[in-house]
Image 1 (cartoon, rainbow, N blue to C red):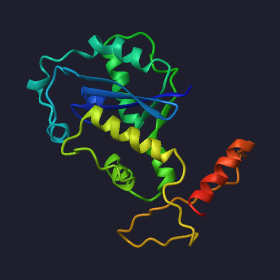
Image 2 (cartoon, rainbow, N blue to C red):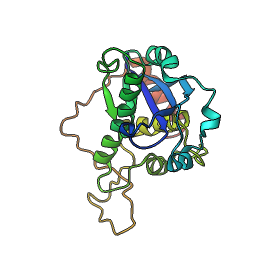
Image 3 (cartoon, rainbow, N blue to C red):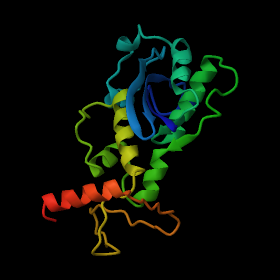
Image 4 (tube, helix red, strand yellow):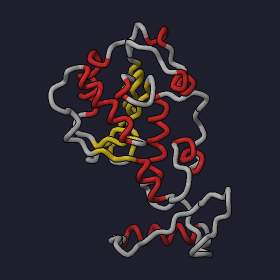
Amino acid sequence: MIREVILDTETTGLKPEDGNRIVEIGCVEVINRKLTGKTFHSYLNPERDIEEGAFRVHGLSREFLSDKPLFKDIETDLLSFIDKADIVIHNAGFDMAFLDSEFMHAKTKNKPLKQNKIIDSLMLARKLHPGQRNSLDNLAKRYNIDSYDRSLHGALLDARILADVYLQMTGGQVKLNLDQKEKELSAGDTQDFVILNLDNIDLVSCHLDEAEINEHKKWREHYKI
């Protein structure tokens, strides 16, 4: 079983070293490349003001967050949800720096996530789509994930979108252009296909039994194929 947790945070600002804190955290569970519907979500009281730029992104005010739990109050539940799963984060360095800072504030011993594999979906996107904009918004548009209201960012909302994006990015080809090996991009164009290198891929052959072959023949005869 492959268990992955897609994680996202919202913060009071850009740098934890400036005293900024996490104000929201959201996680989505994926097992064997399928969304299970299980999530973890919490708003957090940062015990400080929200920088103007951060407020414009997520819309969470200090007043709204004033009665929310502290990070140390939800830490046990968060770690229980993550457990030993691989953690998928877009721009992982940002969120991990804030999480490490919060663990320090909570006086948590050791680094509780040091045994977890961290997968940076931004780095993956840059490999798949070099030279293109690979923010979560851009990736969602590229993969036609448009059923979410993105008027404001939210940790759980972004984790759900990232889960959809990540599963598509790691599920094989996006669009395969069979008519040309290369596509020259002019300014403003976006690449809508991925050239696949199959040299190191082990192909699995499947063998049908007699019953399956007969069923396939019936299907072809029925639809006159």
